Image (cartoon, rainbow, N blue to C red):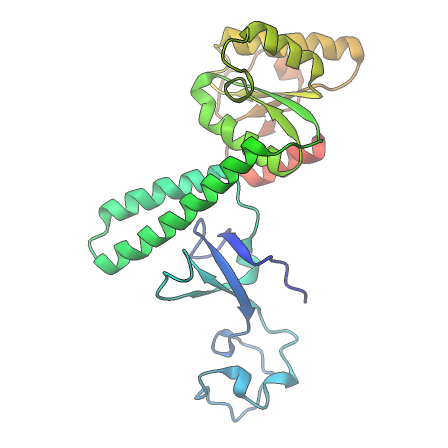
Length: 271
């Protein structure tokens, strides 16, 4: 089976390492972890490397494949891990990078073993690098995809910025007031411009946004334009439980509360 992963940054999406972010160096078969009977019955695993075994090339068609993963810069890590390749993904949402950074900070504060703390610090530095690279790319990329206004409360800025970066990575052109309104420009005027240009309005629904008059003004304008044009333009994204407006209750929302990547993929298909 072809290797489904690209070499480089990955996130573990299942198993004991779920949520950890590391560097995928290579893939391999590990006979010590394999239940398939494709090698010699006389094999006693004394050889340190199964590749040196003359029976090695006779099978392995059904053997599970493992990713060799370093949780951090491989030049700094003292060891690597064999992770089932199906537990790894190259798709690392911005919000998972932020969550992992916070989890590593908490773990470092609690760590009493210096060796463990050092491993966590190495991973933290690697995850921070991935975060900054993605953040910078989202600021300088010039994409030709859909123009997407992200309508949100300022209190939901972190989620909005994560969504922004992930949409840029997929080739779209999202719009956020903090990023796209220059100093000195009129805020209402610039919002009116993007409302007329945007292909879709993505409304982040939360207790913060449903009480925001700014957010209401943005989506209500799009709502009536949608009715007039008979074309879907408004897509609600539920990021926290809240009381949804009666007008928006008539529209199907995408639920981002539990599985961000699944919901994000569904959003991409909807655009």
